[in-house]
Image (cartoon, rainbow, N blue to C red; front, side):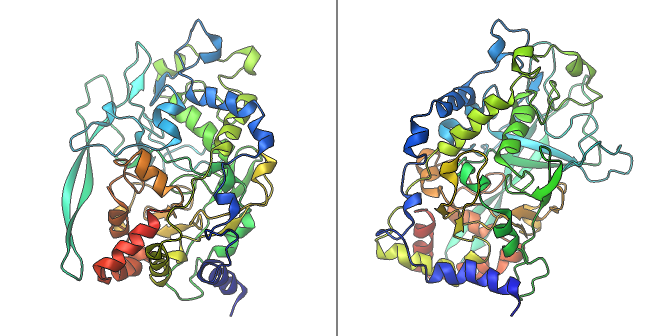
Length: 463
């Protein structure tokens, strides 16, 4: 038995299967509280962070310098617009255009980059030559917004072993008509639809030690269980080093701070310390966009949002509570947990971590958490493939989605959808879309009797 095999099985299967819980209800005390400790609750910094999170930014020049700098191209005027109640987006309805949706985006990336100039520092994706990394469906006055896509859903019938039938919805994205004033997307550019993610436990994820994630990696499947999770090694702009990716559907960001700065720059069009372009995602070909006024201001470090403001946002997000895990005393919950283990869902959805040092807040350190993710890349099959690679993540590979917070999502945003593009309307459908390394677990799920499937879904929907 190799050391890697020992770590993988003991952390995922052994610890969870025979977990000695720390709380009478069966889960660590830190998961049942209200997020930040008393010291942070008396600190005004999270309040300032919440204000910035909810602020509506204005295009330059603005009468209010503190809100100056929107765009020129953007997807939303505030973080809160996409993360209502700190939640995520909603899947588009049949026929909806992304030009009319909020919290749902089209990401872009070249599938061929032979003629693309080498950037000054590593990047995750070769952008579309004209439209960059993401289609911004809104713009300041005088500029055209970028092209949009409409969404159609094709029926995909599924039949369980007991004869139960279900119809999944397979999304098809069609480019809306482009007027003559705008060029077409490059023929080598792939697309990938993305639903705005929920913000559960972001500060705690930031505090997970990289060594704990690396210990779970098994890229060559040395234990022969059919699961070969890989780390996505990504560029940390702050330290100018390669780090373990933790954030994003393909684990392309190493820290919460860089994840937030990327969103401020790409989604709202604001210059930040790590992404200083005041024109956001505008490319060299979008000259009018580059020439538009910006909100870079001396009193905020010649940026539109500076590091102090970002620190407040980081602390605010880190102070958000992780919801209580529900129904832990009910027999059906325990039955569902046992099926979760037997179907080998824990091979990717690792239940437990212990946080280490935090650059955001001491209250995040040395806490036992249950995110139910290994934060590794796994092949999820061709049907979930994106249109391009991101760092080491191939088209088919996705970061294991953390399962904590599902119960809150179902309450606050019941029509939001699951998976990276929201195609799964329910947790049940999300399981049925699993392919690749998860195909065996999906097949086993489909052979379960109906009452056992119900128990597993009850467990998952209680997290």
